[in-house]
Amino acid sequence: MMSTLRDKRTMQIVLWTLVVGFVGALFFGFGMRFTSGGKYDSSVDAAKVGDEAITREEFSKAYQPVLDKIYAAEPQGPTSEETQRLQEKVLNSLIDDAILGQTAQKLGISVPDEELAASIRREPYFADQNGNFDKDRYLQVLQANQLTPEQFEADQRQALQRQKIRTVLLDGVLFTGSEVDYYASLLNRALKSDYVVLDESAYEKNLQPKGDELRDFYENTRNQYDHPERVKVRHLFLTTPQNEGFQDPEKVKKTLEEYRQEVLSGKAQFSDLAKKYSEDGQTKNLGGEIGWIERGSLPKDMEDNIFGLKKGEITQPFKLQSGYDIALIEDSEKAYKSTFEEVHSKVLDQYLRQKASEKIALISEQLAGKMKDDESLEKAAKELGLPASATDWFNRDKGIPHMADSKGTADELASLYIGDWKGPIPVDKKVYFFQITDAQPVKGVPTLTDQERVEITQRMVSESQQSWLKDFLAAERKKLGVKTYL
Image (cartoon, rainbow, N blue to C red):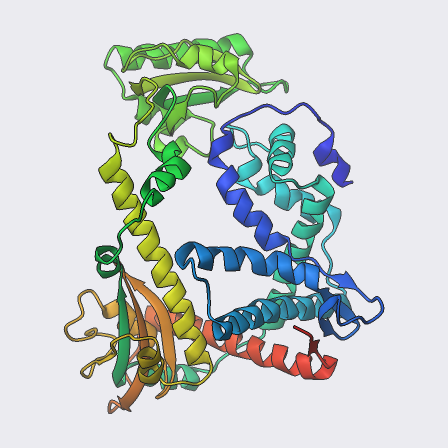
């Protein structure tokens, strides 16, 4: 049945560059597949989950991209302790996924072809400019990512199955009114916390590219500075269905020409007409805004209508696969090819931001790893050469003293108990880790509005679901006799 999604073989390039980056990440998430059964061989297996094996090859596919990110931030790479912790984290994720898959099979939870096809058709990354599933683009994106339709569909089916089993396992969490009131009193305690702050701007100041490092960075990212000829456009699209009762193509073209004349005469704004009449669901609410389109990113027949016009001009109605379109040229730029000298300052700023961000991500990983090993935040910070500080008393209503815009952060910490920690929490260009060191109850139970009661209940459900799932997975590990061989 899934072959109905693959019955075309000729692929066209339609807004290709907008989707490649996302799909590369999407495929990594879906690419963690597991082999089943087989004879035990510890030189081949990374883990055994009951009768199911997680092979070392599968582990490597999940682990290598994570390791590559670390080396990008720190050329010397992780220490042996950090490597072990990282391997355990990746392998534990694979084990949890295998347990969920086995649980789904036991409960008879599956993903029929019809459900899988509907899910793929909804993905905007495979849609044409009118928001409709495009089989050619679907095949093109898969081919660019070196995946066959069969591989992608198998991974997508597995991802949907995991979503369904999580929903089944977690939907039974309920709370009484008294439990909600108690939790409200918990949220309104006064708290003290140790904290560590990682400041991106501080790391930027200590970074200095060496040798040809900055020029190499420019060469690897120059597509951010160079661009072919491009235009910034809005459009208004009308379909021409062939069903009885709908307007014929000539009437649609005439209607679009009337809209065009209204704009050119100053009687209407193009964006207002697009919001009211356009049948492109992806851009309608944006007033038809598409943004910048580069020469070579659209089929030639479309580009011939759009490129060559001046700012403020509107195309004549032109034919698309399922209707007619008009486009307003909001701006245009000639092709630009930068030189390193011209964009040196921009390249340096981008280099410093990216390297500082990578550095903070690595330190955050190290700090979180030590905290998960039950170290105190103060001790973990000292081992990593990081300064730790302590807050004054705070609560979620007033925020954290001497910390700007911290009400949201204080709210995140409000339900933690003494010794609990949370991080990384990004705030502006900084990243924080907190560990609660003291708490004081507040007299009386606050009176909750209906909206507050709903919000607190949702928060309780979310936190309890995560806690319950963690306990469930731990119990299943014991039941299945999970073994690891790294």
